[in-house]
Length: 119
Image 1 (cartoon, rainbow, N blue to C red):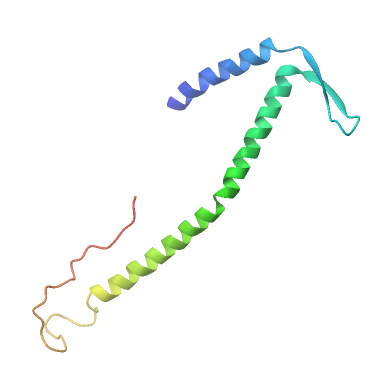
Image 2: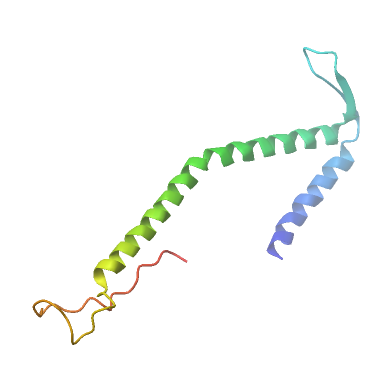
């Protein structure tokens, strides 16, 4: 619903621009003899759309390195969490009554909550 409320005024302005600028313009490419006659509104809207997608492509390529670093950081965090669980939790083969080694007065760390990322 919010998307429609934001998009509707933009579309109304776009249609009004296209309807009020219908005079033909001659488009040419300088080093060649290529010419094209098109309505002004279509010419401007096509150029704006082309540069919009070109800008989006530059932004997407610019974020490739950051996405790679984020993926490596997530894998490293998962490996560290697994290592922490292996160190903090007692081995499942030993029961409370059959512990090997001297008894310790240190508090049990078995109830340390698992580390989780943002949801």
